Image (tube, rainbow, N blue to C red):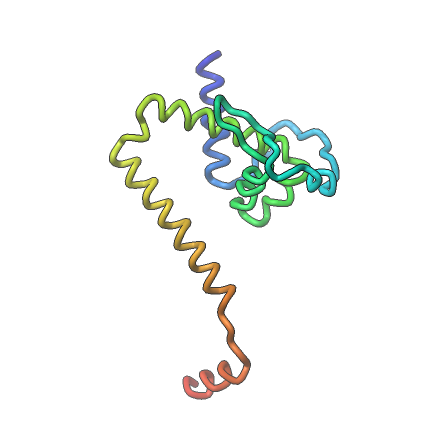
Length: 147
């Protein structure tokens, strides 16, 4: 039984880490309340507790914001409970790995550092795109000069 729970948790954790939706065979989520009701939750309200770690509504929303755009609406709506369960599984596995000292493995540390740099670079790229101002005259001039 313990092995099954661990196996299921690992699968779910990997799914969340990859940013994909649960498989079509996963149990259907119960109907959720309308988005307006979700917006009424105070951002600093604790909505999940995993061991000694507490996750607020704002942190949960931040996790959802990190998902691919095509998954976000489902994660905030009909699959909100499933996403919360996946976050719990991910956090439990992460806490277990840290207790076992797996986070001290040099290869894993290197991969974690690379992922952090990848996220930071992605944020910088998004910021650059947001702040770029190109007018039609500049585009036409470049086109004319590089036919």
